[in-house]
Image (cartoon, rainbow, N blue to C red):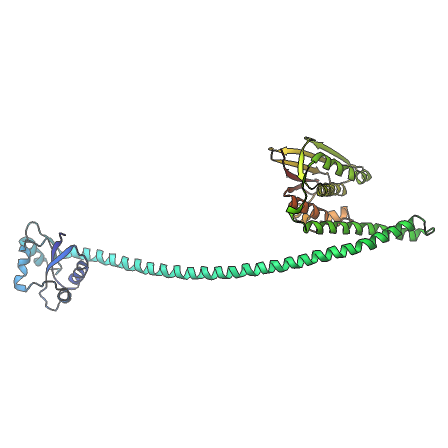
Amino acid sequence: MDRDIIAIVGMGHGGSAILETILQIPEIYIKAVYDNNPEAPGLTIARSHNVPIIEIQHAVNISFDPEVEFIFEVTGKREVYEQLKSNCNSYCTVIGAATTRIIFHLLDAQQNANDKLEAYKNGLELAIIQRTEELENANKQLEMKILDHERLNEKLQRVNDEKTRYLLQATHQLKAPFAAIQSYTDIILGGYTGELPEMSKNVVEKIKLRCELLSRAIKEMLELANLKSVLPENIQMTNTSLNERITDSINNVKIIARQKNIIIKYSPQDTSIQIKCNAEQMRILFNILLENAINYSPNDSQIDVSTHLEINQYICISVKDQGIGIAKEHHNKIFQEYFRTNESVQQHPDGTGLGLSIAKQIIDLHGFNLTLDSQPNQGSNFMVRIPFIN
C-alpha cells in the first residue's frame, strides 16, 4: 500500500504533538525528524519509535530527498522555513509553523471532542445501567404490588361472597316473619278480631305500610343478590317479542300510573322486532324503568316509551319522563346500591335505592347498554340499547 512520506523539523512541544499524532496514522511514513536541541522532547519520542533522527550537518539535505513529500517546519523560525522552501523539490510541500499550529489546534480540538464524546459515551452507558437497574427495581415493586392487589382482590371477593351469602340467608329468614305480620295486620284491619279504636287502627295501618315497604326492599335485595351470583353464560336466553315485553310491563304499572293521572304513551317503530334475552329479567328491567318514571314524575304528566333501530345494529328503547331530573354529577352514582339524591328522597321517600342497581346488573349480564340523558327539572330519558337480530 502506498504511503505518504514526511519529515518533521523541530521537535519541541509542537513537533512532539505532530509526531505523536502522525505515528497513529498507518498511511503516513516519517522519513526523518530533526531538532538542533538534542534534549528536545520530540527526539525522545522518535527514539522510542525508531524514527530516524537527522544530524545537524545533514539537516539541510532533507529538502533534497526525492522521497519526502511533506516537511513540517515546527521551529517557528522564519529563516528555517525560507531555507527549506527554497531548497525543496517541486513535488515537496513545506508546511510552516503557522499552518502546523493550526493543524495542531485542530488535532487538539479533535482530541478534546473525542475525549468529551468518550466521556459522554461512558456517562451514557452508566446512566443506562443505572436506569435499567431502576426500571428492574420498579418492575419488581410493581409485580409485588400487583400480587398484593390480587391477594387483596381475592380477599375482598371472599368477603363480598360471604356478605352475599349472609344477605341471602338474612333476607330469606326475614321474608316469612314479615309475611306473617302483613297477614295479621290484614286480619286485624279486616275486623276479624273485633272493632278497633281509631287510634289503634291508624297504628296498625302504619305497621302494614312499613311491612309492605320492607317486604319490597327484601324482594329487591334478593333479586340483586341472585343476579350477582349468576354467570352470564348460565342465563337462559330465548328470542322473544320486544313489543310483548314492553306492553306487559306497561300493563303492570298502569295502576300506579292512574293514581297520579299519568299517561304512558308507547310508540313502537316495528312491533315484530325480536330480541334475545331472559324474558323474566327483561320484565323486571322494564318494570323498574317505568316505575321510576312514574314515581319521580308530577301528577298529570306523560311518559313516552319508544323503540327505534340505530343503523341496523341496535334497537334503542327509550323511557322518557317529565319528572324531577338528575344532575350530571349523579348520573353514574344512581346505579350504585342504595344511592339516592336529596331530590329523589323528597319526591319519593319510600324508595329503596336498589331499583336501578338491579336494572344495571340485568343490563350487564345481557351485554346490553344503558345510558341516561337528564337535567334537573327537565325530566329523564333512560335508553336501553340491544343488539339487533335480523
